[in-house]
Amino acid sequence: SRQSTSPDNSRPRKLEKGEIPEYPDRALSPTEFKALAFINANVMKNLETFSANLLNHVNPYTGLAWKEDPAIITISLINEDTLTQVLRNSSFARALYEKEFEKYLKREKIAVTAADRNQQYQRFLSEVYLRGWRHLSRFMRDLGVKAPLTDLNYINDIPSALLRNNLDFVDVHSYWAHPQFLGVDDYLARFPR
Image (cartoon, rainbow, N blue to C red; front, top):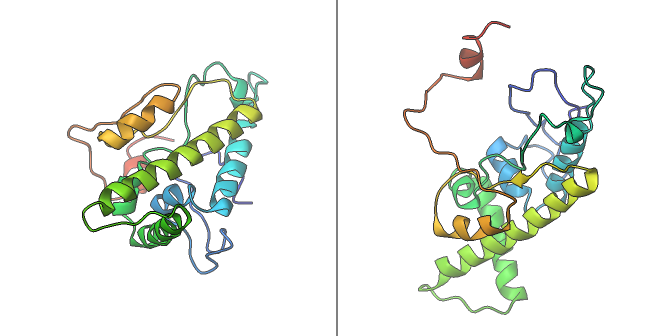
């Protein structure tokens, strides 16, 4: 099953075509998965199943499940998932968010003008993110995770800063002279196995 943990956790998990039922002919990219977890129940369920499998894994040397291992001191729920950024990088996810935004405007009876559309869209993204964060953090606590939880660890902007008040702690990634590799295999080839 694609939901099991891999002994080589250095590689990103790749979804297979049809792994998310709504997209039978599409293997979601990591960027699409990050964005859609907040608006698609099957993507969120896939993430929950993967997380449960990963965190319930028992370390054969300590006899502890990773969720209770004191060596794991923090958990980032979805790495570098700032919605404004991931939506810039996926026209597929962006189109789905636009549809959800239109539903939101109708449901909330919000009249949008050209002058305030961006502000209303940012408000929508913040509400979507916060609802997803609360759901996923509650899932982790119900799973038995006691480590502090974080998220929104990429991009420093005002909407993210405001949302970070809800996190257990803030971890923001910033890169100086970030190395560039042709691919994961090129990077991994630098290290002996």
